[in-house]
Amino acid sequence: MGRGKIVIRRIDNTTSRQVTFSKRRNGLLKKAKELAILCDAEVGLIIFSSTGKLYDFSSTSMKSVIERYNKSKEDHHQLMNATSEVKFWQREAASLRHQLQNLQETHRQLMGEELSGLSTKDLQNLENQLEMSLRGVRTQKDQILTDEIQELNRKGNLLHHENMELYKKVNLIRQENADLYKKVNGTRDATGATKNSHLPTGFSIAEDLHPPIHLQLSQPQQQNYEIPARATKLGRLQLQ
Image (cartoon, rainbow, N blue to C red; front, side):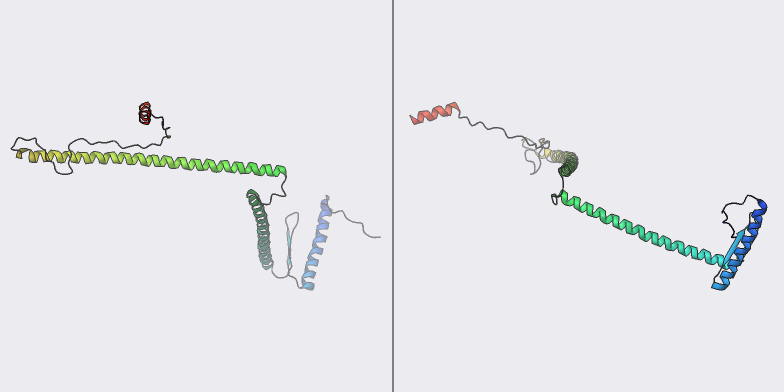
């Protein structure tokens, strides 16, 4: 009569559990030795009992087996990482190609091409998108023009102030030259004539300050082409 199948679960009885551990441990160690001898394999076996007792077996050296295991595990981990990285970039490349195709198709549709397969709703959405884009472009253009006008106004005001300062300095120099000319030539007038009647060319005592001219554009005024009544009367007299 054959032995019945054992349910694999924790044995509650302490004595039975210890007996089972000893039997299966010995069998496992025996299988490990046979595997190492028969198949020329490097085998390392480590067992800890429930009480913390250590049982081990190694076909060569437990240290060399562990070092080889760690190295093999590290190489395997790197290989898996490299494989995973290659797969990741392959997925990314496929996703980017798909996005590029969608963008190219959208661009062609925005340019008015390949519209035959679109429904009325799709065409309406495309039209709304174009209108929104156009509003954005116009807003940006207006903003740029406004900024440029403000910058030109600022530069114009700065140049105006600089021009006024230079104009004041020139007139001050002219006044100083005129006063100096009076002092030099005022005592030489022996005839009693009006002093300073002969000023050198380029000197002017009179004030010639003129504010800068502001040019503004205005709407053209409607010309009055009505013939004056007097001119009409003269024309009639000549005809008679």
